[in-house]
Amino acid sequence: MRQLPIPGVFATRWQRKFEAFCDDRRGLAAVEFAMIALPFFFLIFGLLEVCVIFIMSSILEHASSEAARQIRTGQLQNSGLADAAMETSFRQDVCDELFGLMSCDTRLKTDVQVFADFGSTGSSPALEFDSATGDLNGDCFGFSAGGQNQIVVIRVFYEWDLIIPILSAPLANMSNNRLLLQSTVAFRNEPFGNSGSGGPGVPAGC
Image 1 (cartoon, rainbow, N blue to C red):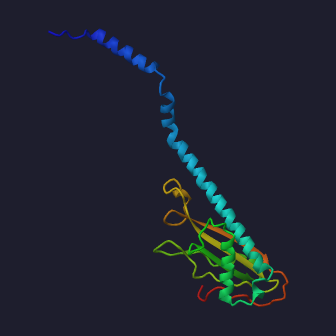
Image 2 (spheres, rainbow, N blue to C red; image 1 turned 180 degrees about the vertical axis):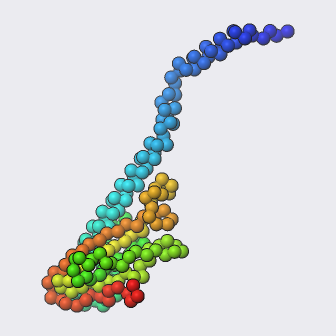
Image 3 (tube, one colour; image 1 turned 90 degrees about the horizontal axis):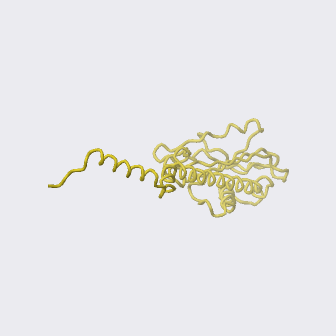
């Protein structure tokens, strides 16, 4: 008949094994990394997302400023183009300065308006979003390049798709994990010898 171990001996044997397990340092680094992996990667990917947003915002600012030169100096107004063609040309000027990092599609929207003075430039049409798709509604955006010495405000918008679906959710200000980037340039046109309006301005009803 098999003899069972004495309870005291049994307990001592397990105690020695437990102490040996506690003294074993193999795999300690892997265990510690597993404990901090989640917040570590959260921080890394969060910094990556913020850096990408900063870069894209800077590129959009650059594109807006470069395209605005065509209006400020009167080159666009004196080009002989029709109003619709001037708007298309300005939009293309913005696209050419995006370095291919943003798509020149419906996600890019522009609004160019003339104001009587710099104090009234804050009265630009408010932003509206489509209730079904969540996209930026540009129906009240217009294009008026203005004449010489007139004050012009250019607003350029881009619906940027955030890279990380879940971690970047707090950064999104649009539906479908998107962030609306905006660039604004305000200036007075140079005296280039054209007093025309340079476009129809804000659509009726806005």
